Length: 85
Image 1: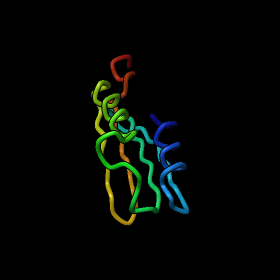
Image 2: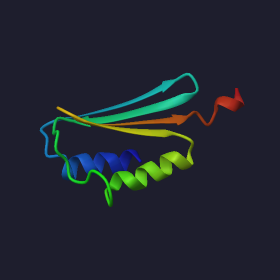
Image 3: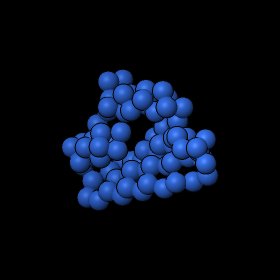
Image 4: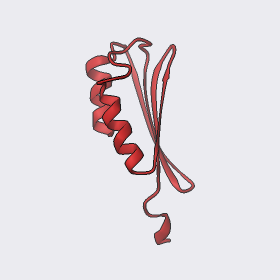
């Protein structure tokens, strides 16, 4: 998922900069990738985000896409190790 979203930003983003943040919170991981291009290729059917969304859903996570001055994808996934502590 991280590799796919990073590749999408590099190939299709069209911006001048990108930001990636990976953080661990209570019981979950959060991954955010943004670029400064408000218009991107693919916004719905057939986009690479559809496959990412499917995998995130299978892992009981969430995927949020924000379009504005920046294009941002935010993924939150439950921490698989939380039951082993």
